[in-house]
Amino acid sequence: MASKSKIIGRQKEVEQLKKIISLNRNILIEGPVGVGKTFLVQQILNELKKQFERVDGDTRYTEQKLTGWFDPPIVLKKGYTRESFIEGPLVLAMKQGKILFINELNRMPEAVQNILLPAMDERRIAMPKLGELTAKAGFCVVATQNPKEFTATHALSEALMDRFEMIRLDYQSKEEELSILKQEVSSKIKQDLLERMVDLIRATRSHNGIKRGASIRAAIAIAKLIEAGLDFESAALMALPSRIELISSEDDPRDLILNLISLNEFPTFSEKKKN
Image 1: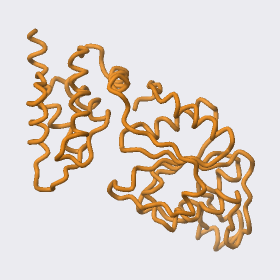
Image 2 (image 1 turned 30 degrees about the vertical axis):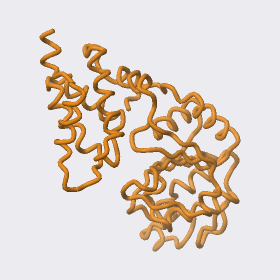
Image 3 (image 1 turned 180 degrees about the vertical axis):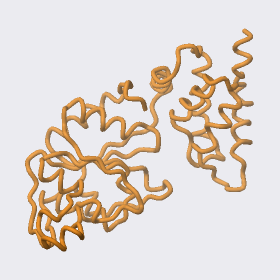
Image 4 (image 1 turned 90 degrees about the vertical axis):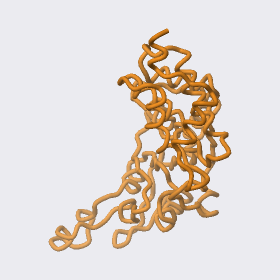
């Protein structure tokens, strides 16, 4: 979401996150794609004026990227010294007493996840050829993850989960999602059309042919396309297919979207302009 945005709703989760961070406890925030996990963490860390190192989870992420690595040309000149070691985000956060913010932790390979165990538990890690590193006060791990049933995720080990406190984020109420949408789009789009966008994405979450429904991001995308001159149906058919997951791979997402629009009698933007 845009940097101008503010947190809407989530009062309970905001208070919980602030308290856990103030205690320097490790926290894991879980929720579906698009519910604002990353946005929430960034806003709270900035509000609390906490320095952090950010890592984005990736199936190709390596252990060396997280901790650091020796630079071969410097090693040839100076050997395996601290000068030849390029510090990764985990080492930087521990040395400087920062927060390590890992976005989508369970997209990382299990071997990379396990490196976090001693850092989270004992606040120290063993660095080959350099010895042991103990974290400065202020270090902790704040992470987000998608539910384990989502594509390209690796379930966290019991040992790793045991080091985290946990906050669960779900989709927000219609009123809060409508407020988020208003915050992100032009005021030229009328209230009733914005409501219909929110109704449409919420309908995808309960359709029996859809495994994973759309988040508020889809409504924002529809609104942006309408601002650019598309009608409602065309905007929905462009914004939604990539943001939902069907139960059957044989179904066409466009057919389901058209069905939902028809059932809910969503008007086109051109019809709105005539009224």
